[in-house]
Length: 241
Length: 117
Image (cartoon, rainbow over the protein chains, first blue to last red):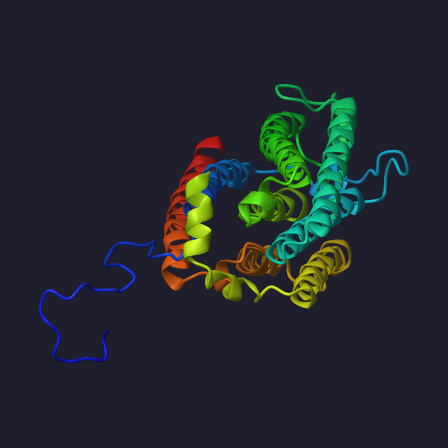
């Protein structure tokens, strides 16, 4: 149409933004999933930035390599970051199985989609199990919302010479922020697993085969990758920094 | 639900574009993510405790590596790199507001530390 120069003035335009179709060339539900994730990204960044502000304003902070040095069931001490490393690996791995499920969906390979989705669900459940173990461990040491360990235990998490009052004050901030932020993330993983199960059941009973498209798998995939993305940030700011 | 079916058929040519994420590429991105995570562990467990990297440089390095991982997850796993540019910008530009909040609260926290001391 655009090749002809002498067109009548009332010619119907066909550019992406002139109406009649999605300028993003994406399906409605997928765009809405993206905007939901955008809002969720704001929620998580608010939480993480509050954490950053409280930590910057504190004279001391419990050292991550001292707080997170146990591997529940194997080592009580001297294994800094090993357990959280395993958790990170599990979550990245489940992101890979998810994207493989999406890839199989594009080929309309129902059986493959089911297997990769089951793999993703197992990965999610393993991550939740690990998080439960870690929470139990920290709870056993005395950390909880509004609770901190006794002063003997507390001393292990700081470099020597920090006054007790500062230790107690800053540990309380740490405990509240840690359980709130990893809890909120864990809740996202939990809902992600539930949604993945629902979608897998739908794949099994042939809903998407009848529809001729596995786009729903792609949409829950977006949510699942977002959960992985948030963990990347939580991991850096709670365990590394 | 029925609107989804019609929409998918209307954009039948869209499927060709999705072919960009092959199995080979998925595993490649996975190994990149794994490698970056291993580098982070190497810094946290070996380089930083032995002071091979200055204390002031460790955290910026972590943040750069984290943003790199975020790029690979969002770009390849979430497929944003293969969407239309308008779509990608609609998601990325609002994210920039977060930088504003970081700047404001970092500044604020420097004030708080003066209050506490």
